[in-house]
Length: 275
Image (cartoon, rainbow, N blue to C red; front, side):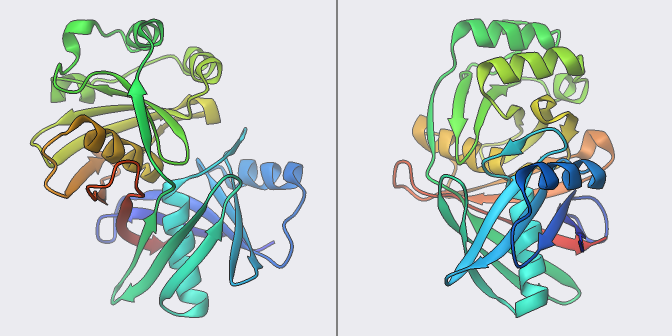
């Protein structure tokens, strides 16, 4: 089976989050897709087959299936543009229908996804306490302007905003403890962010639930964060730029465009490069 390897949200010829992309005529059994994702070894691999006027898509991490993956969707959009020309493609996920647009912008590939609907709510205090303990942080390390939240845009994330960029850079945790915490709470990642300005954020995304210590770029979490900022009334000005992967040595750039409509889809875009 042909697996394409494409880094999403790259910065020029560097960085980005690698994803596997498999375009096939028939989806393999779930256990086979899980095994392929484990063999590929990236945080996610997207499997897509033609379906009606669009594509049926499933996403697998090395250890679990996930309902939605932003960076793998960007990689898929780039792969579809290479295979079928520039355009917008309808994607049927397990629980939602979205679109991805892919286009060639020499010498780069570009893609933009429209996320599933967003929602957010305050995070349970016991979950916040457990997450802070996991990262050896205290409540004083949090940015009071951005209270801890459960944010969703196709997948569920715990958002913890840190007041200090240095604290974000120093992130560390035990993978197995993180896996147990995330699995018990039903969250895909913990989204640790720092607001440098109202529209420029730095982010790190532990993905222990999928067996991955950290993602260098996370489109689903970017969409969830953007939806949360809208719900909060944050002065985002219609879009935010997210810098991720810098502390891993894998610089990545994500842009999230935010409409005024509560719960509406978020447009997340970035560059992609074939590996």
